[in-house]
Length: 335
Image (cartoon, rainbow, N blue to C red):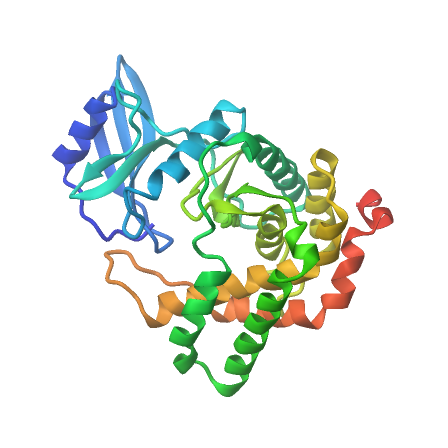
């Protein structure tokens, strides 16, 4: 992630001692992403090498973070492959570094697969469904802070940076999503804790096997369908500069079929998948516009190109009717 807060070696070492993680041997800032400050921390304890990730939270406060960290703890205890937060002797998992909230979580094995095939999409779909089911009895609740209210607040802020065509698209789509949110079908969508940002670089694979999901700091209680849509919009599209944002059908069917093998979708979810695919594209177009045009200073800042999700949104609007065929039983059975 981008490094906004420089953490001294001694301060990180003291935190690891508090967590009984041994002696710090390496502290390395992580490049990529733009929300929080992250470091790889390597330590030695009883002759063993331990690897963790230290996160210093730049936007989230002490009152919000227990939801994210306890959710990760809850999912890990439920057998979902996510990085469990390290706790001190009293069970505390939220700390202070440089006056800001911070946490240390286990580092997942392997690396991200930025060119996933059908097998990787199947693994993600299956594990995502298991995660949704495991989170249903999580005791804490917090809304998706980058959901519809945030879109309504942020579009007027980024609108001056858009050309006429872009402004028309973003305003029309925002009106459409407000309309969908008032519908009976939307009210019927199953809800619970979701990741809300499960892109390819937020999952790890080790020797071809999915080793886990991480970076839950956009999580919140929202529709499971929105989580599925976010995944489809990243895992199942091309990412070259010339792409038009269209979904790749074989990978989409692989992800959806694997998900449904664990948690079958409801009638309302089948009906609203095209709308939620548009919602997922809109959400990340807005946030990338915001990050590009209203940036914060950071030692390793690399804002993502908003045009990618503009193209994805245009493709989802264009293909709204055709996307309904993704959820036909016969299509999924042949995936």
